[in-house]
Image (cartoon, rainbow, N blue to C red; front, side, top):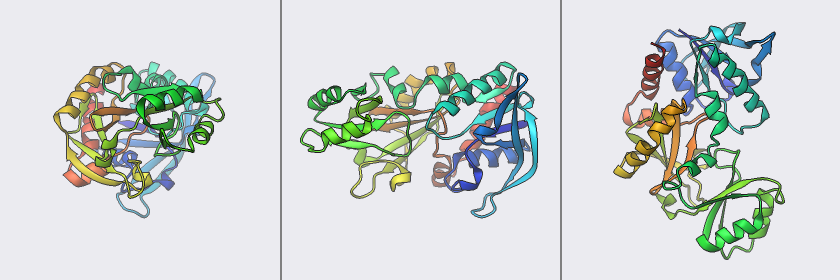
Length: 313
């Protein structure tokens, strides 16, 4: 089996937290031939989608965790499966990457996640497909809209549509003297669309990451508890990780999403739940595998590759 993986520089990952690395370890354990490529290594020459790639060997250690066996140019149509695992923001180069990989998909290669789905479903906006599951929200570039939304909700969270890891997220309450400057800054003076959601006080119990493989949830969540003096449930921002069994409401949300995810080729997804509300649907490079594996002695990447192989058989 030939596996291609498009990801950000492997030299900069945190091995003990990186879900892409967990996937690579599992692929190697299954004797896959692994071809690593960074996003800008993918190109089209005379109608063929190629990449400057490296045949890769990995080992589960915090130093010398990877080795490039051979640098080579490969036709991506020769792969059996390609994983798209580079991080947001979803800027123009990311868009072009999905368009190039869609040509490879049409040649019969399994692309995870489906390029069209990554293009179509912004991780913040996608929750509005399921308004009955999501908190009240406002997407706009206009300060007046957010002020009206703030007036009705009393306290809101405002976040960019193209960031990750808790970057540039603000909480505003109706008495905040910084409201204008926050909204001017995040909308870049009303030239950029951003999203606001009702503030959910249940964040104190954690922003729960649930991983779904072909629409089926891993039966445990990773609750990311904000650090002292912060409201952001992001591990990159100092949140504490706690593993929990899924409750009935969380299973119900996953069941509501399952058909949609399968229909759109979203094989590996990480959803975020605060309290009883769905707040994000992460489709680009969801994380959480290594933490959940360690807490509950799981092999989530193993389940993931079982699903891939079932689709290839």
